Amino acid sequence: MSYVGVLAHYLGTNHPRVMLILNVLMFMAHMGEALYAKRLAQRSDLSPTCIGKWYAQTFLLGYPSLRLLLNYKKRST
Image (tube, rainbow, N blue to C red; front, side, top):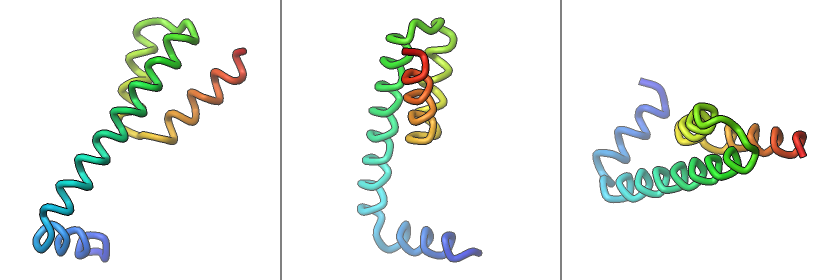
């Protein structure tokens, strides 16, 4: 197992409450970014399909996806 795997196993086994809190916070951060991306895509007059794809991509990938959308919006205005 890699160092990351060993660390994840240790934290999950010995500090489950900390890991739960971290996972909930990460979920909330990704959800907030996805909602913001959806709003940006709507304001950019993109199609509903495209808006949904930006929302899903940003929820899964987070900040890098949001950064792409921000650059797109900046270039289109």
